[in-house]
Length: 145
Image (cartoon, rainbow, N blue to C red):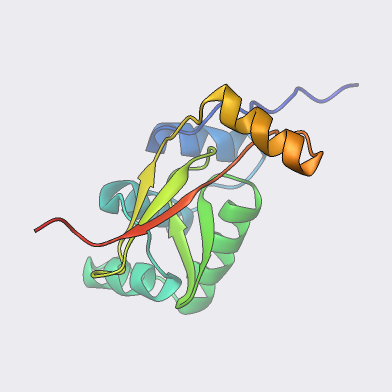
C-alpha cells in the first residue's frame, strides 16, 4: 500500500504547522504546541534559550531538553526555520524559501520575500554553469532613523 504524499505547501499559519505535524505522524504534544504557538505569536527569530525563557515566564512549564528536542524535530521536518547565526541557532515560523534583512544595530532578522528578475538568475547560471533552483539573500543594514 502506498503512503499518501506529504504536502509541500508553504506553512503560513499555526494551524498549517499543526496540520503538517499530524500529516507527518508527529505527535502534537503540549510542549510542541507551546513552542509553535510562541513562534507564531512572537513572529521573530528566537534562540532556544529565549523560547525556553518566554514559555516559562508565561507559566508554561517546559524543560530545556524538551525545548531543544522539539525545535530539532520541528526544524528537521521543515515545519519551522532554523538559522545558523553568529550567536547560535535561531528559530522562526516561516518554512518556505525567503530572504532576510539583518539589522546591524539591533541584531534583528526580518523575513522578506524577494523575487529576482529572470535575467539576473540567467546571468548567474551563465557565469557559474549551475541551474538555479532556489535562492536566499541576506541583506545587512542600519535602521532608518
